[in-house]
Length: 201
Image (cartoon, rainbow, N blue to C red; front, side, top):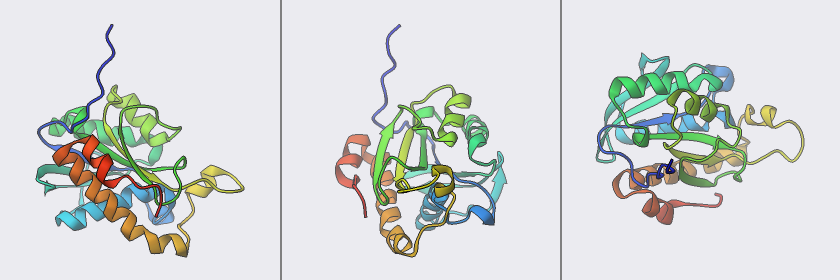
């Protein structure tokens, strides 16, 4: 059986952009919720309302980056994120390669941003859930680096809020990620990587 080719361009039709995180004030502004913060930044830039609740998610629809878009913030808790993603994708008839998922990544230093399509989950429970319920890994990912702790437990670290020094860098970091996704949607993965990949803030 031939190996499926990994897409390098976002599929035609509607684009669904998902930010991963955990719901509730306890987790607000934590490292694990940078995906939520990214989708909120997109909504602000594109002037879309995220107050609608459907598919166990907060969502908004409209146009952004020259495309019809669905923005999604699953409210299931991280390890069940695939429930929201799979239901919304089916309802809106979004191809797997029309899905872009933004998530925290402990394997990248704070402030780094990388784009990819397909591949492994890096142990991320939200991606594991999406892979399991979509049955296809060839969606695009926005990897937002939060780094690893020098000491202590990683799971505790990602549930902590950003430090004051980190908060000061978040705006430029997210703005670059937004620009990267707009380029990805318009020109493809190679061009978006060339223009917007960054090692750290």
